[in-house]
Length: 610
Image (cartoon, rainbow, N blue to C red; front, top):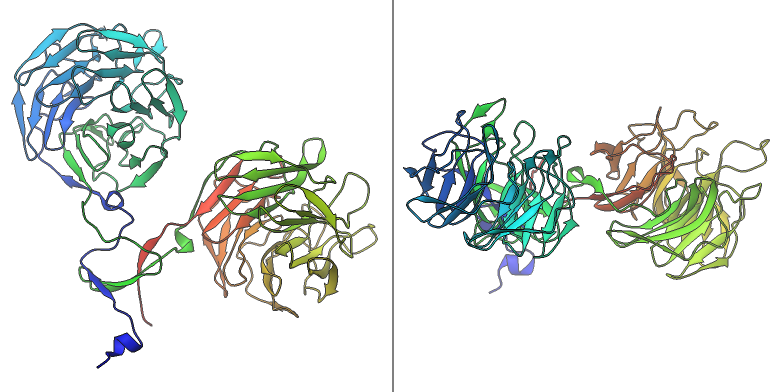
């Protein structure tokens, strides 16, 4: 006999914890055994369950060494030279301690630990402190950066078990930086150049350093792991709790330390298991706190749209991409800084069309691949403040302001390689909204010439792939407005009805294919906005001009607008494209080349019934 759930329902899985994207994303810090001697600026070697901590400040300069067995610390033989801001490599039975500071100067001393005692061996070529170091071996290590007269260093040296050899320098001089990896494959990240705090990350391939993606939070940092699997934690000018994981190409923010601090001791061989000990907690407290980082080896995979019951919290959960949780991040820079452009696509594949930059209107077209912009074939006619519609491989660019007097009726179509002139619009104007695709588009509102005509109009035209047809006007004529949706279901928002540099409007109207209806207004009246979405019930609007260029971002849920995370840079006349979970904005009226991308993470939310 069939069960009801087999006919009408679906099985809801019961889980003890929330689903996760990976074991790493659900990793956490837990308390470990407290050190016998609280100290800062110390070094370490080993793994989470078998670590060595040595040197530091108590606040007196320390030579103490302690061994960790996974639960408690035991004092063992001291370093021969007490010092702080040194580096360490190796294991808890075979470690290397090098560099550091002991009054009155930076030190070059290197000592080897054999499991019971330290022995002095060959010195570094350059005495320094606050240096980065990495390796899981005491016979093959690399030391880089640090501080020594006359200042912050780029110098790097490798250890072969008996002596140090100078190798290729870092690209950016830094001290108090984190390090991970081996003598032939290392990572150096964060640090300070007195000032500023640095976010730079550099990768070592055995012969040279290469700049790679920056750490998200610029800071003096500590870390552990290998070159493709690193964990960075703590640091900062006064002490932070931030934890980030490196996957070989980028950094991801994870769960914070329980206690924010800087100048921490750190050990570990990857980004799923690490130990953080000692350090200096704000405002200026030397601590012996130990924290253990662990990622679960088994977990329930997160999948967009899944529903499950969390037995631990006694709640039903759904996995979604809430717009409220989205954020803006820096994207690649345009080759030609400009504003008043057209844009289509999303954060991984976009096209930026024409605009105004520097001496005048431009025909420049650039494509974005998720990392960088590439110049491709130009528009046939340079224009700014035009309407656009479509995707990065199939777009329209219509009307706008050309180099010659008067506004344009010109319409050009992009096929992924070239622009071709197609059917002109009926009314020449600029500052209009473009909505839809390259074969089914809307051309809404804007400004016409001559000056005796109204400042703004509400004209609306529809494109069928070959020609434009005038259809119903919007209720409030305006220019420099935003628009999202498709040809038969769209919204337009913001804009201005009065001369430039005047007050914007908050008006929001929806199109059902035959008429316009007034809806809930924007929270912030403005014009020259960017917008994104292919839906009239789910949209973003960002930037624009309020009383000055704005960074405000608002999301539309079909009923009302809600303020969400702001742009990093206030901007107006900056084009935008994408969706409410994946958008891009670039340029501004000051001819900026910068871009930002908006993304939302997949997360678990409690289902509530009202």
